[in-house]
Length: 72
Image (cartoon, rainbow, N blue to C red; front, side):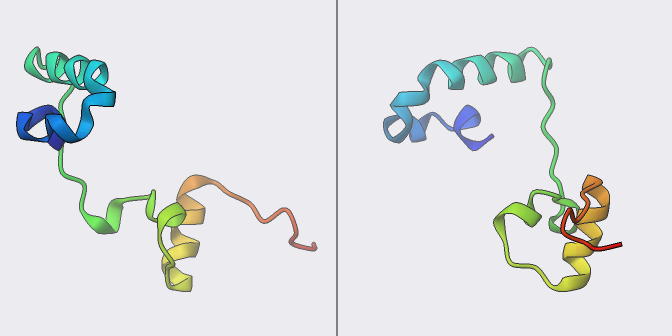
C-alpha cells in the first residue's frame, strides 16, 4: 500500500515497478480500495508470529484448519 502511494520509495523497489504501477492505477481508478485491518483481525498473524494459545486456536478455527495428527 505504501509503495503505491509513495514515489519516494521507488529507488528501493525498482524490481517491482510494473506491479507498483498496476496497483497505483487500480487504486486511482477506485478498482481496489484499501482499508486498515486492526491487529486483532489479521488472520495472517498465525503464519508470521508466535501467538498465545488462545489467539492461535481462535485463528486456526477461523481458517478452518484441522490437526491431522490429532488422535480421535
